[in-house]
Length: 456
Image (cartoon, rainbow, N blue to C red; front, side, top):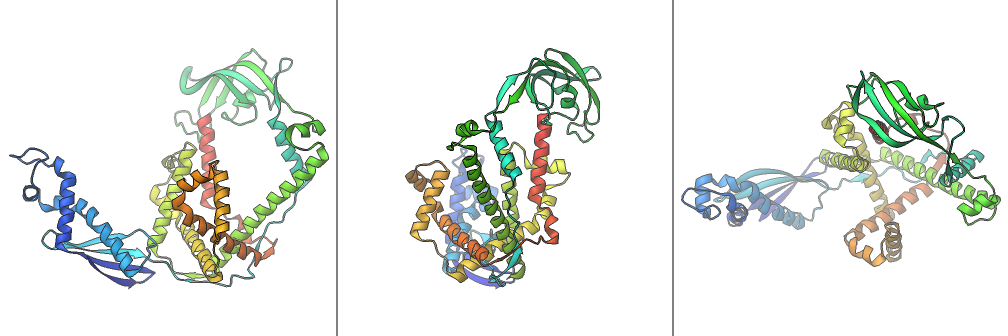
């Protein structure tokens, strides 16, 4: 194998790689052995056709696709090592010449690490939201704790009220015909949760235990099932029972039940400190994001298009996996939004570019400030991650041994971000463009809408 490398514009390089005919013939033979069982030639048993006969009968080209798989990757890796180049994108292959008599000649275009000209990264002024813990914050958190230990008690002396949980049997009819997905039995519904379509829960308010009722409901115009969208229907509902939450009093006994403290005063003091710590951590995170965004804006980086395309694919995969985890397919989201995958990717261009630039800027700070990860820091991070995953430390080491370099990089990057924050200047004056929405928030909102509809 021989190779040359040529620097292109926008931080791209082009390898021209030649695989001699003897080496490429070995790749052809490997492709033949991989596929021999599927070749059928008159006069030969299937799977026993000799190589020369296969080439003569089918043509050598029938083996090229797999032969490229055997020849290109090792030759490309050897060229990277020979020229000491670390790729920063997926390779783009172009075959110039191929054949058993001539060998293989191909080019590979790949991005290399872009040079970063940092802007001034010390003393950047950026927005940090003001931090305040109010009495309302304390009461809201205490109320959540009350709800966690609340008891559901049966209601027999009054009709349904908002906030009650009712157990119902129900069935929906359109034009006196039951429709698919409109039936349920022994279903617990919290009144006011907006789990069902508008009007259903409100229609139950004032109804009695044991009663059977008909609710006249009209489906929303934008309902996902088109045959029901905007249509009037009747739900026949039987109320089996009513329960309501019985919340404990907020006193010393309540505090003893939910915490290690003996008095409400002690609990509130600790809660205040915890909320203040969380609020400061959130404010610091936003401050860091704003500092980094400002530095990215002030730095010069020439990002190859292929790196952006790779990052877009990575974001799409992340969103796909996240949606699947929540029971929603990306295609379902795109259909709901009335767009295509290609249009979705185009919307991600700026997001992908900013993510790449942010990583490169942080990496440049690491290099400039000579940040490193000590053995002690790596050990501490491993213990922390093992604890987070609920794994034995030694088993974590065995399972994630290949990721230790990533752990080191994470530690160094965190030092760079902390350095940026500690040398930044915080202001509580909010920029005018803070109201701009990002696509991740849009996706989250659509996910919520789809989940609510799937529950109807």
